[in-house]
Image (tube, rainbow, N blue to C red):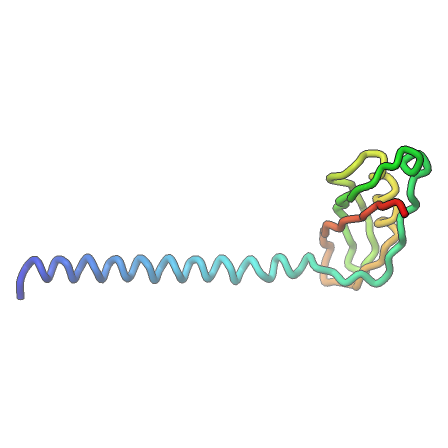
Length: 120
């Protein structure tokens, strides 16, 4: 066998092994990430609509407020905090989400929801 051919075959096998290892590592990362994301998904059992702040109505302020909510295993919201959106609308969005009820889960979880404020 030609020494150059032997050397090229070895390099080719190493490249194939490295690619297989990279593919296996990527697959493992994806498989481990999917259940972690799914664990934070909780079905909303009941929603409470936010009360549009009167001052915001007069000023014709509209938009979305993103709220991060912590939910206990029984499905009750234990904490709600606005993470983006208009500061005049944030308290109403937080108050509404605090009164939502979620499906029971195995443990405490954190989700993000978006509350839209629009004038008719």
